[in-house]
Length: 93
Image 1 (cartoon, rainbow, N blue to C red):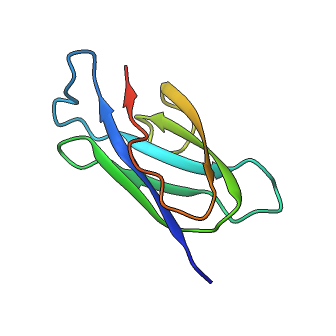
Image 2 (tube, rainbow, N blue to C red):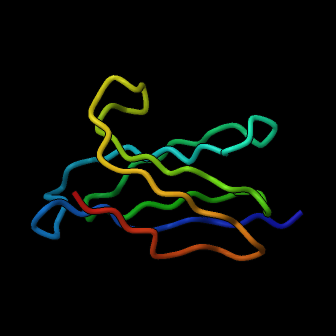
């Protein structure tokens, strides 16, 4: 079974993330879909989720709380995997 990826960048108000680590969750919008995934940005703000199933809609959420839900939420986006990788899903604060 083919799997796909979602990737992008998280930038702050000045266009840089200033080396801040941001946690990103990819949460399937249907409870019958795969388990949520969490990743972190690198020092340049880049992130990648890999091994994602086809025909699944994910809600991406950024935060600075290690995915626990007790920190600040900065942004959300909806991304649909439809037979190919999805690049350029960028966030800014």
